[in-house]
Each structure stands twice: as C-alpha cells, then as structure tokens.
Length: 81
Ligand SMILES: [Zn+2]
Image (cartoon, rainbow, N blue to C red; front, side, top):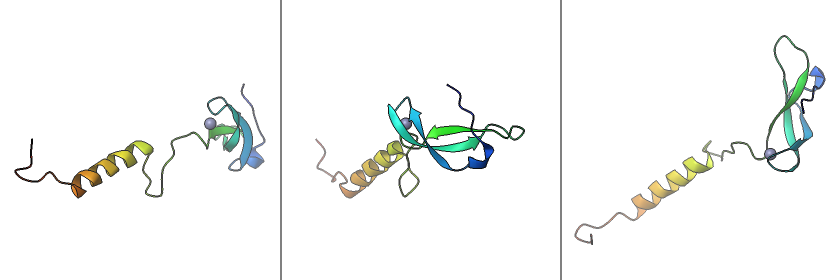
C-alpha cells in the first residue's frame, strides 16, 4: 500500500506497519521526490541495515571479530598439525 503523507512531516519518524518485522515500527518519512511535496514512510528503521558504533554492519563486525581472534591467537611455529 502506498501511503502519501504531508510534506510537513518529512524527516520525522512515524509508526508504520513493517512487512518484514510484522509489527508497527518506527519509519522515517522521506519526500517522494523533489518535485512532489508529499512524503511517504521510509524504510523501517528497525530491521534495516543496522550498523554498530563503528559504522559496521553485522557482517563486517563478525569479520573483524574473526580477524581479531586470529591475531590474538596466532598459530605457533612448529605447532601446526
Ligand atoms: Zn522492519
């Protein structure tokens, strides 16, 4: 369903149904286009590409943690199987 909202609330967050989360979530309202003053609910803020404090996605964070683990426990010389 396409829902058009007033341009005055563009940039604000509204409660909107998310088909991915299957519940009402916070969505940011964005302008449909620069020539159209209407707004529409933006992507769900809750299931979207979440980034941590370092700006990493979950996948990047896992990759970094793996690297850190490998660095913290380097295979010892002569200890290879
Ligand atoms: Zn969602």
